Every structure is written in C-alpha cells, then in structure tokens.
Amino acid sequence: MNRLRTAQLPVLSERIEVSVSGQHVTFDVRSVDDYLVADATVDCQHIVLRTHGIGLEELKIAPIEDIEPYLEGRNALIRQARAEHGIIDPE
Image (cartoon, rainbow, N blue to C red; front, side, top):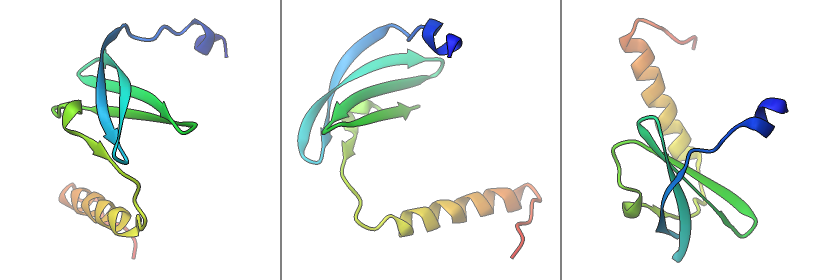
C-alpha cells in the first residue's frame, strides 16, 4: 500500500477523443516507456488503453456481445507461438 501511495503517475502528455459505443470520450494520455497509456471513465467503468505503434485516435471501442470467438482466436495464436518455440500444450 505504501508503494501505491508514493507512486507517481507519468506526466499527462495530451488528451484525445476516442469513440466508445458511438460516444466521444476524452482520454488522458501518458507516455510510459515505449507505450502510450490512455484512461477515461465511462458510465462508472474505468477504461485503460495501452498501445504501441498504433495511434489512439484511430480506435473505436464497442461492446462485444459474444466474446468466445475472440478468445478462441487469441488462444490459437498463443498455442501456435508456443509450438514455434517447441512448447507443446497437453491435449
């Protein structure tokens, strides 16, 4: 807890608008190492974006009704990357 109390946020570098469910929301942007981190609160939900090599202004955020296909695709990519490094997942 002491570490959290004394932690300093990186300096706010800019504010940008991102489309969230069709509504323009202002995000505070900070540069952290090689990444941009942006955050905002929408309808009591805190949203944090971390990007590298992508402009935040290009993003459009929308709710996903069925997340399972996204999770299955991501898991397939992880299994493929592990296999390329000789790590075989159990069946």
